[in-house]
Amino acid sequence: MTFEFIDNSVAIDHAARRRIRTHAATGKNTNKTLSRSSKAVVLKKDNYASPFRTPAIIRKALRSTSDRTGDAEVVGIERPVSDGVLFPIPVPARSKGLVREGVKALFFFSGARYNPELDGALEMPDHMGSVWVRYFFLDEAYFHCSVATTILCSKNLVNETTQGMYHIACTYRIIQERLMSATDATSDMTIAILVVMSQYERLQGQYERGYVHIQGLRRMIELRGGVKQFGSECCGVILKVLRADLEYALQLGSRTLFGIQGIEYLRTLRSVCSDYETRPNGQLNNCGTDRVLQDFLREDLWTTSECVRSVAVMLNEAGAGQRQKLGADEFHHTILYLGFSLLHINPLRSSSESNSTPAPNMSILEQAIHLGLIAFLVSFLRGLDQRISDKPLLSHRLRLTIKDLMLSVETGQGSKVIKCVLLWTLFIGSVAVFKPSDGEWLIPTTRTAMQALDLSTWEDVRQVLAAFPWVYALHDRTGIVLCSTQKFLEIPHQSN
Image: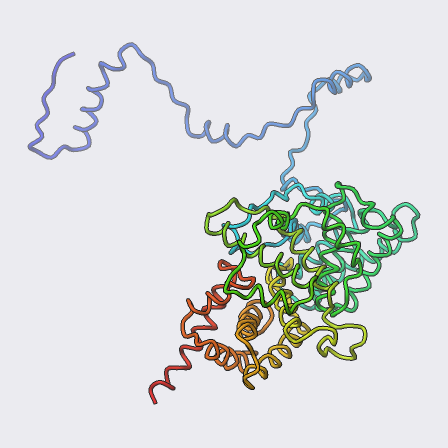
């Protein structure tokens, strides 16, 4: 190959560059033939959709069972163009977008709802294979009710929509027929459908109407021999039933319908309280309040309060990396067990009360601890819509109790423990029970409680709250805001 020298001192035009490339490639591609397909051929090949072929065993069967010559030909199957989701009923094309949204939501709603702030403390389970997802594709009534519930959750609605009313009407029609059947009236599927129907009513605030479903669930389970007759394969269904029972009891102020049966069933499940039973007694002591509270609280309330506080301590330790993460399922079992236990001690509205007056069989201090513990548990009970539903009865009862504690403090009769309990009920109530509209009385009351304990900073307040159930990762943000409000109110006072 001859050498050719290029003068780079002058501008190189297109022809010169082509000459350079041709000359450079001469030696490399000697005796080689380079063939390229045209762009038209390449595009045609890429866009060609080859037909699906039937399996060989089917083609052989077709040849052996038919004498026609055409049967031996390759059978083409129409290529499906869809998301591959199959439903238990025919779904019109106009509704598939909504249903796909429902499917995505159901995968998200399949497990118990947890606070995202607790990601560092809880080991989240995989609920993608949950029965609550599988039922969606197996049963028509469950499908309709789930879609109706999904519409309310995904769009943050309170009132029914036309689409939701259509699906819930279909659910009622199918359930009515199923309840007349001797085999399906109390089946696991029917129980699961009633659970979702109760959630549908709860999302709309129709608790009286939804309570009928809870009563029906209790009757069905009684006909099957009670909660204890359900095996481990039905554990997920029973837990949803007990969760719905607890939420309705908190809203209506009644006792849980499953009561002792629910407590005994939940006690048999793995929970984080089992770790508390093996802890040294002195490990939870803080601020010297334990000894005083134990003397003034009834035994069942004291035992439950210690278990609740141990859960808070373990969450704080797991969040700080001082211990292994807690199992999310075990944590949920524990919350249900403690909720049932607290409402068994005393419901929010006893049968002798005409309204929501304080319980006559408990002292003011016991009422404050009891209601504060319930408020603590409520902060973990997020619904399908990822929100904590309003608890007007609990809010009213807690406010009345705080008023009585304040009266004791203002008259000089309140001990330091009562002042600490008052401060804790104010802060834990602001997390999950009180609304922004309660700030009119909550802010000045909190300021008085802080002054009674000579507290001025959030660090001081946090040290007092550490003696009670308080989870830093979840509750600190609201506590800081409430405490900062007190500092803001002090500015004009100091300037004068």
